[in-house]
Structure formats: structure tokens, C-alpha cells
Image 1 (cartoon, helix red, strand yellow):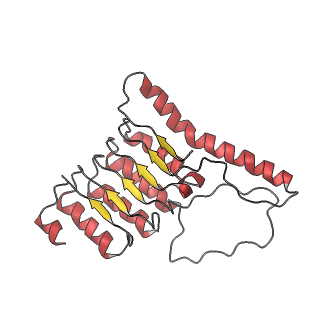
Image 2 (cartoon, rainbow, N blue to C red):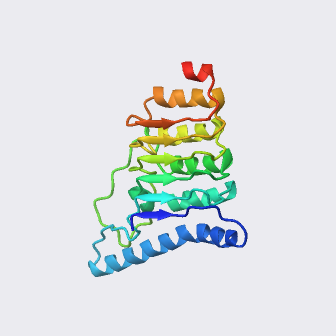
Image 3 (cartoon, one colour):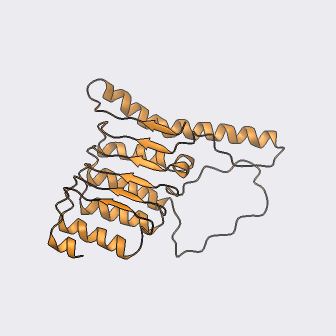
Length: 219
């Protein structure tokens, strides 16, 4: 399974099923991963090798499914760890996530990564006696992020900036921000991201209908 789309407006009784699915998804993935890790550990006579049990998802779309800020923590939990490590495209567009929801997601990505100024500890040469817990490391292979029409302002962009500073999406090539009221303040945040070379591989930036004025354009 490489593509998973939850696309289309969801309203009415289906909303309850959606909320339950969002809450359950990271829990199920974590349980399945731990279960297979334990089996591998037993079969290999104490020698542990990490192999993901999660689907090798490359494209994940939550477009137009009625996400709100209170859904963001579930989305963040789903993205972190083994699932996010394979993801190439993420579409959160056309949802009322707003700055609150987007900040929750981007700050979670940032917190999952070590501070780039801090030295990493060398791993222990001995094998662990039991499988280690799953770990998170941002979205290292993500190429496309679509947060168009999510009511993002400069506040949400600052949270994205934080995630990028920590190396949360180092290979990102396409950033879609259309239809968000970024205005000049958001444009200045974007300019800072580009000037700091936090998106060194960026090829496509969509800021259509974002209200960027002359000040942001000059920046």
C-alpha cells in the first residue's frame, strides 16, 4: 500500500467514525509495530533488527474531510515514527485546521528531532535485551506538503519555520499554501525561511490568493 486518501467532505453521522479512526490509527500502527518487533526478537535468538510493519505509504491525503484543530494531535501522532519515515506526499488541504492545528502538527515534528546544535550520543555497542520503543524523526523523505485553504496565517508559518529549522522536512520540493490569509506578515516569514536556506530543494511554492502585498513581494 503506497497511497492512502481520505478525500471528500465528511459531515453528519460519518464524522463520529472519522474522529474514532483518527484517534485509533496511531495506536494500531504502534501496536502492530511492537508486535512484529517482539516476534523478530524471539526468532533471531536475542539479536534485534528493526523492520517496519507499517504500510510503505508514500502518499497520504486528508483533504476535505472536515479536520479541526482538535484533530491535530492525532494527525501528528500518525505522522511521527515509521509511517512518516516513508512518506513522500502529505495533503492536509481544505480543512479548518487553522493556526492552532497546524502549529500542533509542526511543533510535534520539531520536538521529535534532536537540537541540531546538540551532539548526539553514540549508540551502545551492545544489543538491547528487548526491542527498543519506536522513535520519531520528523518527515525525512517528504517531497510535497499541501496546506492550502487551511486558514493558516503567519502564526502557523512560524511553527512550520521551527520544524524546518530542526530539519523536519529536509527534502521538501513543493510547498502549497494557496488560499491562506498570509498577508505581508506571513510573506516575511516565508522570506526568512528561504533566506535561511531551510528549503534548499524547493522547486514549487504556491502562494496564490494569500494576500501578499508589496512589502512581502520585495522581501
